[in-house]
Image 1 (cartoon, rainbow, N blue to C red):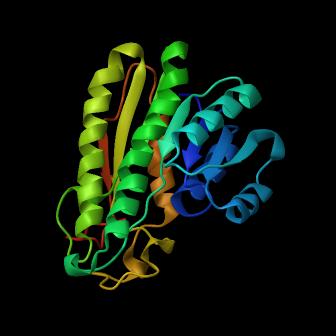
Image 2 (cartoon, rainbow, N blue to C red; image 1 turned 90 degrees about the vertical axis):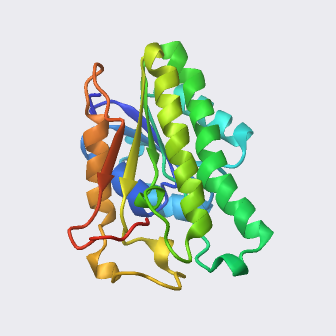
Image 3 (cartoon, rainbow, N blue to C red; image 1 turned 180 degrees about the vertical axis):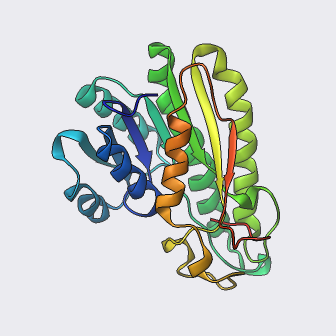
Length: 241
């Protein structure tokens, strides 16, 4: 995909990896749709980006109607949708015994259901176009179990499996589906973590992960990166992000 004049929608784009990616795409001439459920955060995120290249939409990824409307606004505003990045995600950092049912529902609804609904909304346009790229931000938590992150791991294992299956399902329709599995990333994700296994100073930066996603998006129409793991050199054994 040629970044210049491309149109990419990013969930969870108000901060962290999503915002870093939006800035990089914009700096290369790409048009970006920032999707986030926090209106104030979204306003701050879009303020420093060129107004003609950015569209901010308040969206709860758990709501299919809101996602469909965001895609419709994207196509009305920019004329197409080249790439969709499922980046929104969260965790409840605690031992298994402490999980409440609402904690489990929230992680499942945002991390897995939200990504599935996002793919459905994007595919409605991409299939008719005959092309498109979807990148699901998974985690190296989909490669091993992490104490106090058990259900987060479960949602990411599920998202990884979904991504692999979807990639096979839509490849013949010109849609490239990829998974990126970052290790620990220095974002607000870790603000309430009870048991970090390495210092945040050793984590990846959002910019490093954004650069890796860009490398996936830059593939030409005949190639696809199915799965890519990126982690800090200091990250010997750790998973999460």
